[in-house]
Length: 451
Ligand code: S3P
Image: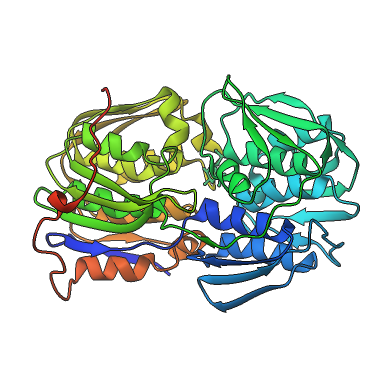
């Protein structure tokens, strides 16, 4: 499949986006370990999240899916059973890293295998601390990559000072910690998304946030079964927020998305770039804040993204780089070397595609310097098999002169299967869905942070 994209008419719309990907991995895992039936609504039925669900099923957890977004999970009080064959994680890094943590302390052996892009990604970051806990994991690929052969072992809690700000590493260790003797503490160099901690608390698992920002979990606990409503994914909304925010006069309302503070840094960046953004948290009674974001577009100006902000917008950097190319002045991204080991080397892929569209880009070891010129030209582009690159450059095409083709776009199914349909609607709107500004009816607004 490929996306053929032309310049968009003025955007004035109200949308929702599919469920949050990170939460759609965590909720089934914690439900599976719980002591009863858990109903999950708003689940993201993408390839990545289905890999996690399938892995739990082959370990003896009954999971019904009467509708794509509805899961009924029959928790087995931490009792997982030996899978009969390899567990295929596809290209889902979250599935492989979280399950490595979960399976390390089980009384059985298993093997996690990977698809073409995941096979190249580093697993040493979870293998090393899990081995410190007593895990027996052999990486069969080069440089500690998949397949991973896990021989179930008795684990002991550790204190781990992670050199990498990674929510996947943190979560793998917390899941292993649930099956370890004593307590496990994970400290990270900068705060990352905290969905696991919130969800563990919601399922009444005892954890403690340490004064230095570390998180501690005690072993041998059974999560209490709970129902959960997964909010829309702000990382998916990001594509449409940039599409409207970079269009002077564009206007978009995104309803029912997750507004967890560890995920909303992109809103601050868009404000710095000149867009008008309002967010209103409408519901926190299920732990994860959810609500509405409204954006009004403007001529964007360049900004700098770096330091502790980076882990909190790591998945939005491809689309924010596109925003930078549409802005006036320079947009700089630093301290984002993690982008080089995502589904593809995203720094190289962004630089390659932006240059093909006529932008001036300098590739840095840990980021990009983009000299925006306010315009792009249509081009034939590769997705590099990476869903976020495919979607970011489809949006770039909405602003380009002439036609843009994004090849090999099936990868969007990893996180946003409905993206192509939404893109068609943006290019060929059937009706104007929102005509009156609703900012004044929102109850809270984000006042922006420092430059
Ligand atoms: C994720 C964490 C991030 C993010 C990924 C999802 C998660 O990865 O990029 O898309 O759900 O924990 P890292 O932990 O490698 O930073």
